[in-house]
Length: 121
Image 1 (cartoon, helix red, strand yellow):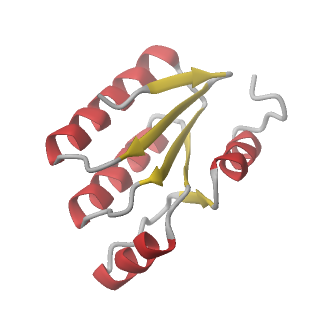
Image 2 (cartoon, rainbow, N blue to C red):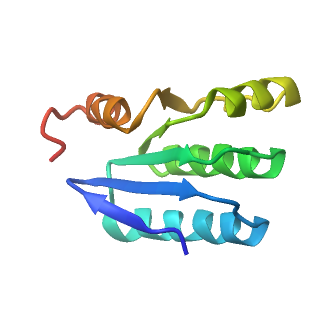
């Protein structure tokens, strides 16, 4: 199970290792349920631990971000490895409408700006 933490009104998760399609779908469901329960203002998804993102995972991440935005939550995806970015572009799998950041630190700064809070409260 992929942990989802709440930190100052932001849900933080880190996707790592080889994930099955079922694990990715379970993550999507849990993330959306937590958004509803916590009324978080932002979601930060760290994919530093992923060496490979296939088209299914890219689609689910993109859909999760779009669903969260429809629910009124800002989303930032951070930590994408260069080869993952290259693969997504080559597959034509752009993450449309998803804000990105180089690493977790920059991602947290970006999500704070997006939710309009310097303290994240």
